[in-house]
Length: 574
View (cartoon, rainbow, N blue to C red):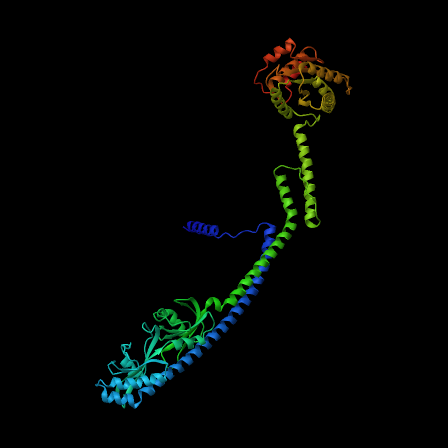
């Protein structure tokens, strides 16, 4: 169970790791670039972040101070203005003309004419009121300053509010006839403890708009007058039916009310994201909201941020380009070394890197070039040893057979012939036994030198095995090959050897006359060689002679050629 848990945990870790891959900075250039970028970005980001925070904090404090100042002044002025209007109404309501007429003629129809004249006279002297109205305790209009009496929009509990608070502030509404926003305000009409009715007035909201506009922050700022539940009454921009039908979102309004005289970011139903403060109007259930758009409030901060980001980006470009340039200068020699090492790994040793500078990289380049030179020399030596007989320096058996295959394909393609000479040292075993292996080796070396000196550069001279030699003569027919073989035999016979003279028996064959495959041609030349030995040695035989042709025909077509001297046959002939 524990093993299973470990495997599950390991699998989970591997899965998470596969998804959370962090780019690996493998190359030196990428590390230099990353170091430069980090060394630029981190200090710049910290400095600019601190500056941005301080700048934003200072801007927030200034915006808050301005908004609080404007909202406080507006709320104070609105409270004074409203108190003056209510004071005027209380003065009007306390006049004997109003109280006496309500007390004596409340049920008479003549009251409207008497009070109407009084109200019209007041209206002429106090133009702030659109209409002055006297109401009975049931809300019936008894008299008005206008010739045409209209129904007054009063709240449902206006009587209760009027008796408890001794004043009434109605809800703002839009008068479609006058095409303006209005508000009903009222005070009670009393005689002693007896409530006779109410003295009401229609206030035009246009003066409120003008008053609010004088305190507006700027072209993008707005001051609103709203009721205690967030319903709009007036605005510094305009009073319109749409405005009076709207209200602040309850959540946003509660946030503003809970943070009175503090800047709060909120969402306005018409103008979007705003920053504003709320101030309650003293002695009245109204509030003043002063706001500006979040964008304009922090335009300077945003501009500073954009400039800072532009500076950081410019620094990144400059530092990145500089780091890339320096990295290229540093890395370019290393890349050449890596490329050179790759070429060497693939087998190409013809690499010679330019040493363009000093220091560690220059020393490394010199060591690399020296190493490649040694490897090249070693490979050349290995290649030479792989195709060369170690004793005589001639081509070895394997290289000869490969050369025969190539020459056979070339001759077949171009319709040319070539010849093969097989030569064997006469009585070599007896010489070797009599004078020792070092003396025998010296004989083979001298004969190899004679063969090499007797051939053209395009010919291939090889030690076929033991004391047997082979020669490939490209583009040479049987006649020319016999002449070459005779020259070899004569020179060997004339060459002085230690202890005694040495001779060679030689066989010659032609491709494709004596065989259409390299193995068949070699077998034919080998047969001619043994014919020469049988005829008395120290002579040249070729497949044109009857005995050699019979021997060539007896040679198996799929004969596998020996890589060394066949001892039994050699011993027998010798």
